[in-house]
Image (cartoon, rainbow, N blue to C red; front, side, top):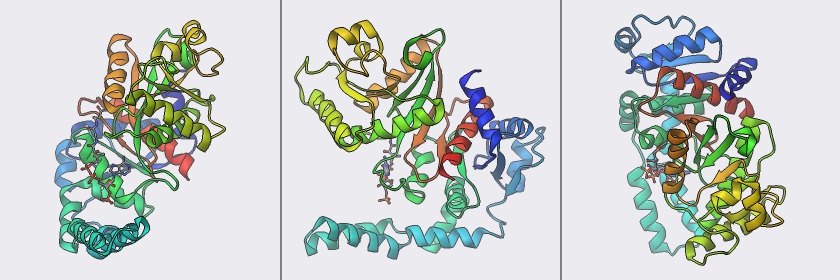
Length: 362
Ligand code: ACO
């Protein structure tokens, strides 16, 4: 069974409610029709009657719940939640607590509180954001327990898709940063888990430190095991293998491996490894003898966003691999981003992946 068919079967086995905020795009309705027909998830589509009529014309979305953001009996509940989470008072109090925890001076604390107040929203602003950017509405529905996850990004940038989730849903307990992975399915490939790999972080973080890389290793291993159902073997990638080159960039990765070993002793992780040493057993044995991961890695952690983003696209284009994602990991509830060039079938697949993530978080 192809990877995505397996994910759809898992999603069907315990149906979750996924919200689609992009009613201003025909592909949403094309995908919704397929999702409902295949019984993959319950759907909520956010949109005005005009948007639904214009972009949904010709598609059978019977069974989907339509929520009009200008005329929704639950709207006040979402507005109240928005203010509770991002109001001026909340933001100021959170900044004060953070500054005190860091031991900042009174002056520094005051400056942090003033900056936080500027980020805080008023009721008027909250309403305007919910009505003009349905992703905020979708995340509030998730936060209030009315949906299990959200999928967007067919006609919004990655930043605009994930910012509301970062602001409103925040990270899971114990996780400092959200990251984004691709599940790569490489045809006719015996490497990894018979051609299945996770590549991370390919989508979110722009500033990689050793502790962040270690955390990405752990959450990516969890994602691999959740989606592929096999033990993860995590390679921390570099242009050096086990000290063959000396540079701060190499040290950053080898430090990350040390942190990962200390913090997550059960994790099969090794590095720093070059890509060939990570994947090919003869090269792994030669360059990293004794490593349980070298030559057998199925989860690849890249040392920068450039490397991760370029790496997955190279494999997708040159090896004709399927690239499912970016799937966000580390959020308190699942929200996933689409490519603006996506097809309706990609939305169907992403909804199934999101529903499976929601099952694990239930
Ligand atoms: N994990 C958890 N929280 C985060 C993260 C993260 N990785 N990044 C930001 N946040 C939080 C911030 O702490 C902040 O919280 P607060 O407002 O409560 O204090 C909130 O999210 C907003 O953060 P900002 O830094 O103000 O938001 P910004 O506008 O800079 O956006 C974003 C953050 C969207 C993740 C940005 O870093 C980004 O654009 N990253 C790259 C995305 C990208 O372009 N990827 C490549 C394309 S995707 C592809 O090709 C598949």
